[in-house]
Amino acid sequence: MEQLNLAPYKVQAEIIQQTIHQIIKDFSMFGMEVYFTGNMVMVYEEVHRQLSGFIETLIIHDFHKLLALLYQIDLNDETIILAENEHPDLTRHELIADLIVFRELRKVVYRNYYKNQKGTQA
Image (cartoon, rainbow, N blue to C red; front, top):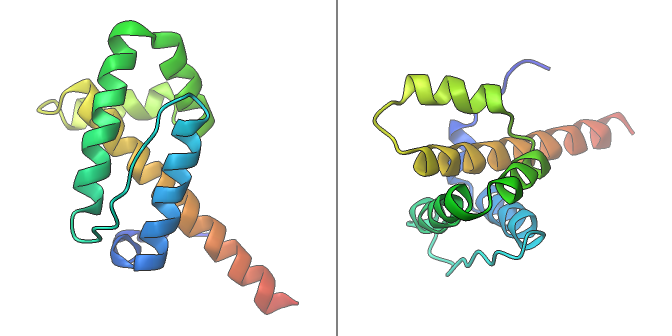
């Protein structure tokens, strides 16, 4: 499958809800509760702020837990290093929070894509 353009999906309510659900699920596995108020206009800012705080705390206090979380989310060192080089103006925790949201969005979009493909072939 070719690389999907994720931009149109970022604003679809169902995709946003699935993405937030995936983030909540992954973070809860590590004892971190992410809250979503339901404000679809500010959803990414709301979640990003929470993730950034969690990531900052993990970088300082529990780096091994951060590595386990990133492994669960399927976000590797190489991706983080490349993003740091492309966005030197962002702090590490802000950048990782951005990458997590993007990765979770991509997971949801691809999962839906393949589910729809399977449904059309049946």
